[in-house]
Length: 125
Image (cartoon, rainbow, N blue to C red; front, side, top):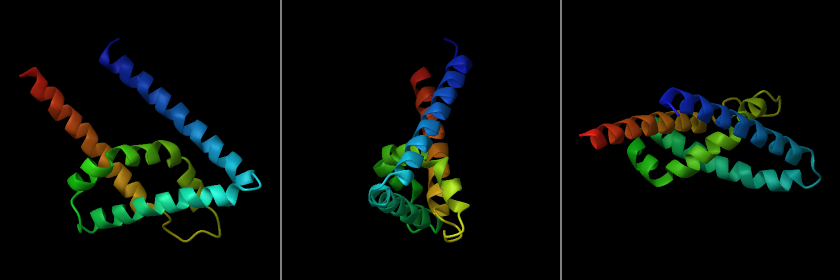
């Protein structure tokens, strides 16, 4: 499979994965004990919101956060990318909810693409 076809297939998989996570969160929100279960997610997301704030204000280096938390940050992106904007639209949510988390996700995914490109270039030598 050629590179561009593989990338398109990966993008389709990621889109489907995000949609599925979105559906699962909606099911949780409607369930009787959904608030309790979602509270765990809110706590988890708040941790990455804090990391995003620290990276944005340059209290810590992006590279350090990338090396320590790349996997979980990418999983947060997959699971909550479509959910967070919906939460932000609600009237009872503080303005800017998880903006630093979204900033962090963007920076980490961009860093990962650059890191992967550099590794591929080094392998060709």
